[in-house]
Image (cartoon, rainbow, N blue to C red):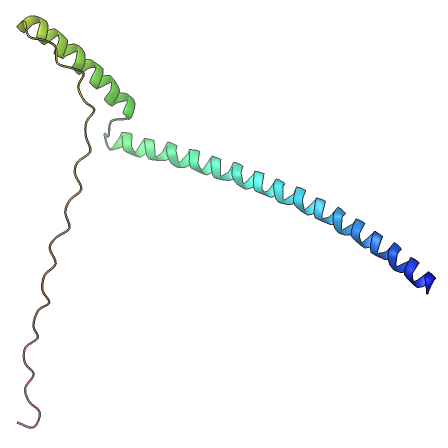
Length: 121
């Protein structure tokens, strides 16, 4: 019986050691896969941003940088106009506001179906 218990303890110890070793390897592998996936997502996001910016430029949509420069230019022009006109310069122009969302069209009542002729007439 003692030999059996001793053998069981040794076997159990080796099994626990192997399990812990495999767990460590799997954890490391999972971390590596996760890091690679993160790199791919970052690259994909960068490509998407570049292509979107190109498309918007082709369509003539001004960038945030362009709008900021235009705002600065407007402020300077307003100050010059105020100097020439003798009026106080207007406070900094507020950034352009987004257009209000369109309201959904009112729901229409369902159409009434024409009365079906009675069967057997």
